[in-house]
Length: 267
Image (cartoon, rainbow, N blue to C red; front, side, top):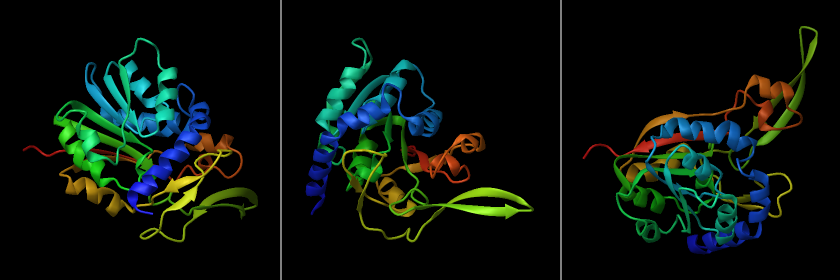
């Protein structure tokens, strides 16, 4: 399939499981969102009240609602009409959020939102779901105001890629038997798109597009951006002490999320 066909397939899949993800995230996001994604994104955004923010791939609006509570005016977009419908239902009647159905792989559709209109753009946990990301970066470079920034969070390409295998082993360390958790990887530089589940029990898998860090940032650099901040949020030792089973919470030394801030250099 070409990129448009892949994008259309993705939209149909996300429409069909929008209710599952809406229930999973609720009003404030799931544990991944609350502990790793939202704090790292807000840290890099460093918002001021009254700023205008474009939230790309907003899902059910969890981040958009948080940003609005901080005093920003938010334009939240997603390519799934069903997800936008559910996001609107979760948002208070009087809120500084406008929701619209916009495909982030469609550069012209993004540009119709208004050039130089936004102080900041966010895109969280969506880049790895998109068959093409160059149109987003090209449009973002024109949508941002002079000193604006684009903050993204994505599955960490070095660890949370298309093929991690979770391991649990027993280790006898000086007479003390310990559980040890790890992941095993077989590829990084070149992996084809694969379908996988994003959460236990979801109705159907969707396609993940793995990009090594060099490829992930190449389209941003080509659009004129520079990277000026990078975070690798992970769970803590305290989380690991309470975690059960093969989960990211047990891997407190390995970040499953990569969060970065892009800016346009002074012209």
